[in-house]
Every structure is written in C-alpha cells, then in structure tokens.
Image 1 (tube, helix red, strand yellow):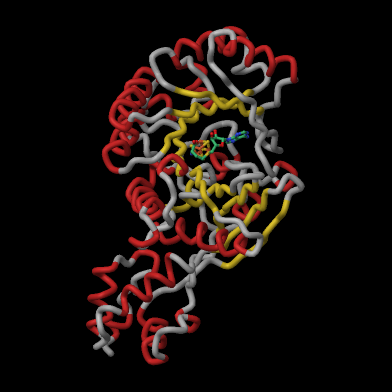
Image 2 (tube, helix red, strand yellow):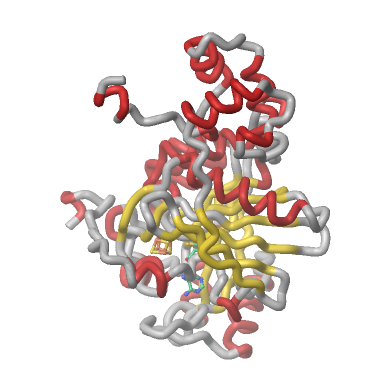
Length: 371
Ligand code: SAH
Ligand code: SF4
C-alpha cells in the first residue's frame, strides 16, 4: 500500500448508505447482497462491532473491521439523577467531549443530543455559550449518541422514541450534518434508519432565520425556537444572534416554516429574575405569538456559577403564566430534568471542556456584516 492509500479516511459505518456499502463490498470481491445484512446489524440491532455479526463469514467480518470506521465514543461518565435522567459525557475520537442526556418518562424515553462541541452564539444565560466554539460534530457522532443511549436503555425494556437537539451547540449552525442526522433518524428501520416519527424529532434553534426556512424545505421534523424575549433590545442582550436576525425576521421565518410544514412550533422561554418575566415582557410575548400556531414552554432559569442571572420566585413564574393563560396561550412550566447532576439540556459538560487545551474560537456565524 502506498502512503497516500494509507491516509485515505475510512467511511464511518453510520454514514454509509446501501449503494455506497454495496460498492465497497464489491470492491473487496464480496457479493453486494451482504450490504443488507451489515446494514441490518447497524440500524436495527445497533451493533457496531463487526466481530459480533454472527451471520457473516469470518473473512468478511475481518474486512469490515479493517475497511470501515466503527468508532463509537468512549463513555467518560454516566451520571444518573433521581428524576430518571442520565447524563452521558462522551469522549470523541479527537478527545473532545460531547454530552447526551437520556430522559425517562413513564410512557416514553427521550434523548437530548449535542450537535457541536461548544457553540458560537454566546447567549449570556448559557454555559455552552460561555465556552465558545470548538467544532461541529459529524453526522456519525450525533447518530452515535442515539446508538449508545439506545443500547444502554434496551435492558430496561425501553426504546428511545423522541430526540431533541437541545444539548450542546446550535444545530442550524451545523446545518448539513444535522439534516443528514435527522433524515437518518426518520428513515424507517427497513430502509436503514432509526424509524422515529417526524413529530418526535425536534430541532431547537436560537433563531438562525434563513436556516429555519431551509430546514422546512429539506426535512419534515418538529421545531423549537429559543425565544426568551420578545423585544429586540432585551433579546439582543440575552442572545447576540438577535442582532443579525431580529424578531421581525424570525417571525417571518417561523410563519414560512409553518406554512411549508403545517407544523406547530414550540417556543422555549427561560424565565430569568428581573429580566424577562414581568408584565411588560408577558405582553410582548403574547404579541409575538399572535398569528403563529405555537405552544410555549416556560423554563425557570437554571443558575450556574459564572452565569449572571437568577431564577425568579414561584409568584413571578405563576403571574407570567397566568397572563398567557388568560389569553388562551397554554404555557406549562417545565423544570429541566437532571438538575442535580447538571444534566439539564443546554447546561453541559462545562467542567471537562474548560479543562481542554483547545482555544475556543468565536468565529461568528453571524458574519462580518452583522457587526
Ligand atoms: N442552541 C440551541 C439548542 C441548544 S440549547 C438553542 O439555543 O435552542 C437548548 C435549550 O437550553 C435552549 O432553549 C436554551 O435556551 C436552554 N438553556 C440554555 N441555558 C439555560 C439555562 N441556564 N437555564 C435554562 N435553560 C437554558
Ligand atoms: Fe448556543 Fe443554544 Fe447555548 Fe445559545 S442557548 S449559546 S445558541 S447552545
């Protein structure tokens, strides 16, 4: 083998479709029909070790092990919280950390996945935002979070039926890899996907308006928008991305998304003491929702050392909720699961990541023209 051949990157098993795998197998002198057997192991059985693919000849198993990248991240830690959630800290091939959180409910199991290591968008209330950006996750790294979590809960008789992109990173800033991942999650198992329902896979975004419209064209999944304020100066203070795509642009994009998909949008609204949950902000929120088919989740802010805000008191939370309810906007209060192990989505692997030597780059997705 020449050194050039040595350095050719192996395709990852979770990023090979049937045609590509068939071609690869044939190039090794193997019959093309073996591709279906291999893909069943991967997508239905979530088996990522070719040695365990018992209906394949030993020679083929060895070739698969050699010619394809089967890497799954190492479980650096797995922390269980009393409320049934488990936070997984996963170490990637590059030695960086990504986090996934398993959320167990009585009648379903959800997984919160990360789409990037760090985030460029620097929201002032978010631990990931404080870290800066390290890199995008590849589609196979996002899919690996599902494979690993599925294998962990299988023994409990659970199947992960819901996925939310509410872990670390801004999914629409890693657009292509996220769309590839969502498509794989939605594909039926017989077509080598995870067979999830399109209402059960939710992309959560801080509001990259043009990508919201693109998403509607590219894939039919659920959408959550992290709103957190419905007045431009306040939203910009909390979420710098609002400078580039202010509320008017965002609302237009959401309306387009609704028209194209027929779906209902979830608006995530963190409640931060003395900041965004007074009567004025409640009115602004009602006005923003007008004309959209949306539901609101109210999320009391999760305090962390180093973050400048506090959680409001119960009275303030209830008053805000009441203002919405009186205008027929149901807005349940959702306490993030896994708080005790800081497993709450979006509150991520900060300690480990801060220890990494990589220097966060804050190259902005907002673009130079936004400054
Ligand atoms: N970047 C995407 C998805 C990841 S963040 C987004 O912003 O939507 C997932 C959710 O966690 C977002 O709604 C985010 O606003 C929320 N979040 C971040 N920090 C939080 C905190 N300290 N308390 C409560 N929710 C937080
Ligand atoms: Fe990034 Fe979302 Fe955190 Fe904002 S809230 S910094 S977009 S991960």
